Each structure stands twice: as structure tokens, then as C-alpha cells.
Amino acid sequence: MRLPSSEGLRDLIAWEPRHGVLSVYLEIDPGDRGGGWRVELRDQLDAIKVAARGDERERRAAIEATVERIAERFGGDAPPSGRMQIGFLEVSMKPGRVGREEWFAAQYPVERTRVVHAPRPHLRTLAEILDGGRPRAVAALSSERVRLFQWRLGTIEELAVDDLEIFSLDWRERKGPQARDPASAQGVTSAGRDQFDQRLEQNRKRFLKETGARSSRALNGEARRELLCIGEPQLAEAFIAGWDQPPSRFAIDHHDVIAEPAQAVGERVTAKLAELDAERGAELVERATGAALARNGSGALGPSQTARALARGQVEHLLIDAERELDAGQLDAEVRAEIEATSPPATGRLDEWIVEEAIRTSAAITAIRDDPAEQLAEHGGVAGLLRY
Image 1: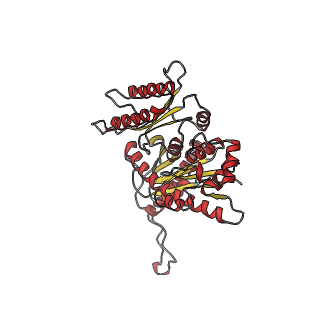
Image 2 (image 1 turned 90 degrees about the vertical axis):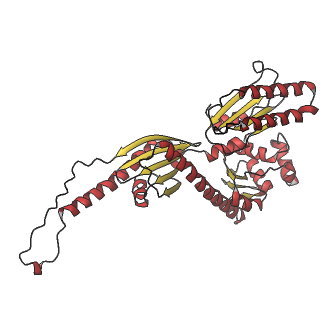
Image 3 (image 1 turned 180 degrees about the vertical axis):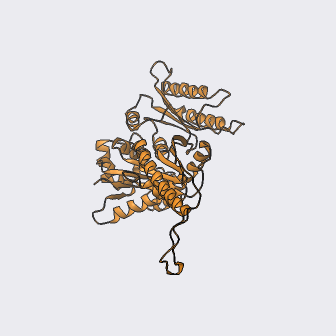
């Protein structure tokens, strides 16, 4: 039930059965005792059957049979685990004969319920979920304790806890030597308690730095690219100083969660990461726009420029308006002819083709929302940062 890797996404792109694929994105609200999510699913499935009325008999029967298999899967009293259920089903009469099915679950409901019938799996929504739910490192910090977490797809996992061990807490004040003539003394020596405080502060900084070094080694390559530290800024600075290679994105949330249960930490982290992703989206749009407008720039703006760059494998990071649908009619005639000669869209949906090409060429994909999406709308709702 784990969401697919990059290789799994490419495998799904190549899946194009005779009668197409039904793609299911089902958001389940466990607090909805009225079962509203089931009503929404049923409405979506009914719309698929209505759209199939004009199809030839065999195809229509296969669609209706596949719709019923989906309805049966979610017909029980207890909701399935996972806030988001994602499925791809080959349209066929019987599941055991030729019908391939792929089901996944996640705790990251960022999309509304939808069912799509298309020649291939509808992967745009899944690609956007994978980007928003990408692994992130999280460190909860205090001066004497560090808790290391990894957040992914709305779920947080505690990986390690480190505590500073203080073997001696001698708070007795030790007097410095008395000067024979106080009036002629050149300075005042530090009291024992001050010396203890200084040593303790040094130990705390060393503890945070060494824990940072261990944490960076404990995280996998993807999670360590982005780090959220929860604690005072000076603690975060000491912790990040231990990383052998600083993360590409680093943020501080100035709160004390060191004693909070992991679930409460996870809820705070999920909300904070949503804010940080909004900032990231604005930065990406600004970078892509500047790169595209610069002389000999490494950016693409608009459907035609971006589609051409994707077809040539140039796009490193695709940016697409989360709410916008694109069609092939928005392409310049020259670009459209170039694409149709090599890898034509399976449907008239250009946005689906754009996402598929990004997956094929291992480009990152980020859905842009809110104010940054309005900026991107000036350029047709799509842009790309280029490799070359």
C-alpha cells in the first residue's frame, strides 16, 4: 500500500490497457459519521457510468463492472485506513481475467475525491501529493535534549532521542584568591558558579553540534535535503553546525515541543510545512520567471515553451497551477507538431501529458497554489526550471 517510487510512476505511465484505466482519489474523513465521503464517491462513479452511455457495448459493460468493483471495495461499515485512498484499475469485466489493480494509501489528503477514466492512469494528482508529502527532517531542540523525526505524507516517525548527560552539578560558589590590597587589584576573578555555567554552555553547544552530525548521518538522502528545527534559534544554529553538508532548505519554528507526544509534534509540523511550501512555491515561480526572462536564461514560461523543453528532456523542475487544466490547443502550431511527432498526448489534456513527460525525464513536479498561482497564471499556468 506504500505510494510508488519514481520507477513505479514510470511503470504506471506505460500502462495503457484496451479500455483504459479508472483512477480513484478518495479523501476519507474519519470524523464524518454520516458517510459523506461515500456519497461523494458514489456520485463520481455514477458520473463515470453516465459518460460511458455512448460507448460501444463491450466497453460500456467493462466500465460498469469496474465501477461496481470500486463501490464494493468501499461498501463496508468501517472506513479503510489512510486519509487518502488511491487506486488505478484496468477497465475490464472481471478482475481475475485481465484486470490489473494498484491501490495505495496515505495520511495526506490534499486533493478532493475524484474518479477519472482515461487511456492511462491519471498521475497528475499523485505526483502533486508525492511532492507535497516528500520526506523532511525535523529536529525538536532544547539545550539538553534533541528529538529527531522524519515527516512524510502527513505522518511523523521519531528516529532518535539524545540527552546531554551532566555528571556533576556542583553549584557551590568557589571564591577566587583575595588581593592583599583590594584598591590595587586589576580585576575580579570569575566565581566558581560562573565557571560552571560557562562549561555547561560549552557542553551544550558541543552536544548540539555532535547530535547534529549524528542526525545528518542517520537520515536518508531525500529527507536530509530539508530541515525544520523546532526550538530557539541559537539552539538550531548549533545543531545545524554539525551537519557535514547543510540542507538545501532550512527553517526554524520558535516553539517548545521537546516534551510533546509525537502525534502533537506531527500535527504542528504538518501545519508549519504547509506554510513553508507556500513560501517555496513563491520562490520557485520567481526563479523560473527570472530565469526565463534572462538573456540565455535557464527557464521556460507558458505551455509552448515548457512543453518543448519537456519533450527535449531539459526541465529539471516543473511548476504547474494546481487548479488549472490545459489542453493541446494552447500550444503553438510548431510545438504541437513537434510533440505529436514524438510522444503525442493520450488525450486532449495537455496538463496530463506535461506531468507524464516530467515523470519520464525525472523532473521534480510542484503544484502551485494561491498567490504564486496567480503570478503563474500570467504565463498560462505552467513553467519550468531547466537543466541546461
